[in-house]
Length: 317
Image (cartoon, rainbow, N blue to C red):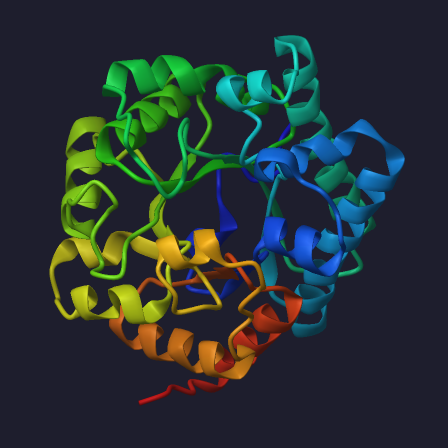
């Protein structure tokens, strides 16, 4: 049985953490090879599993030291059918990788010395490239495609699922409906370009309002990830109701565009303390922003700096 599926604790007013850029950390800091950026491939041997334990423990340490709850995302952003095919996984092997990802986090939750909640989220990525939404499914196609992975998570001790780097509205709708059908809470996290719009051109407002309208406010909340605060902070200058649905943020360390990051051969880690101040400033614009993590280029140092800045209410001009 899951622990928090019927009552997600991060929906309270308290700050919650989540992890940072898992793939960039594993590649650039741990020196690991991730074909197709697929962290779940590390479950194939004990060395890979040890690397994942080390990675997640670094964030649990930050949460425990600050007495703050944390949402741990499984290493399964690429663990859906099309990406599994590219990596040579059978459907059975892919499902087992998803189950193992939850089991690893559940074991870490058990061993955690902290008293604050540890929520396990099944991480789901887009069917296509997270930067290039050239092939957009219908919502019906998206529901059918994502339901297999979501059902696998629903049959484990995962408390929820989070769709990371969603690029388009139909896929977000279909994924939400799939989660509703199997009875597990879902979070939609959009990525945006440097103009604050989805890669398909719609506004964040449209991305949130259209998904809510099509699913009867299906997502537990929405997030933004894989973009720098300077890319989207200007679109949040409003008191419109849709802004209250944004409750989580996993920003990039770098202010570079997706195209620039795609071509980069070195990791741009930015400045953790400056990023922390930018998060604190965003909390003044987003009244419900509670789940704080990172994406490309960030690691546990950035999350620690974000925690400190947001607790102190620090902001940058």
